[in-house]
Image (cartoon, rainbow, N blue to C red; front, side, top):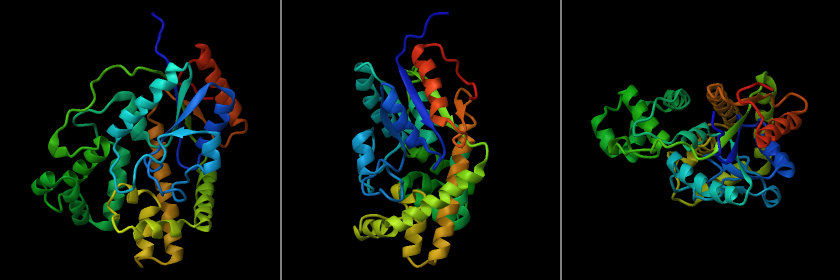
Length: 322
């Protein structure tokens, strides 16, 4: 069998609040890696507290590419991410170092490695998320959103045609392009890097749920609502923008609109974050070639370091649980 000569890259994946950033920073102290963020919310400037964005001191010590690269009023798609990530990875590889991509947006990881097709396969995670939104807002409201994002498709689809509305919105999230355009996606070429996938998958979700609640409370104490007030005051943002649909921000916007009291806002924010983690875990379990690490198992950094060292040495197997 010929030796795979492609350069190396690392995907460090996991649900929200699983400790990905801390682990990535630790690994960067011991290995020739450079960090690239894989997060659909961290791309936006001015959304710092509610996204749990690494603070300025952390970013100064451990630079992350693809953070703060868009204004919240601007769209950012999986196709945009793929282009930006490859452009960031190439000079890292050229310097003889290894790109380490860290984050929780599974769609971005998949788009990067597999490319984007014209009509992508259904995503259970995205459909679950859209269904949850529709349960709260109603399908006519989802149809109105589609009308803003893809007017041509909305004209063909009735306001109560849940299946077709869901599919059209799903395609937009998967490709960043309107369904009506039927835009050709990725070329199908082989991904230029050989990848080690490290997946932080908790064996017990109870500690993860506790961290989610603790982190949300810490965000509130740090001024999350003031951050959203500042965004609202701009006047050019609204709840249907991709940035404002980020977990926590939609719930904060509704609270500031007077739809919920403080306690209900907190409960909804924590619940939405737990649902996000559930969808992320479901996606990660489909990544059968990933090395699985339990973030609550003692010695996490050591287990990840051994897997990475074997990979860099060219002797590490893939797909095994640690």
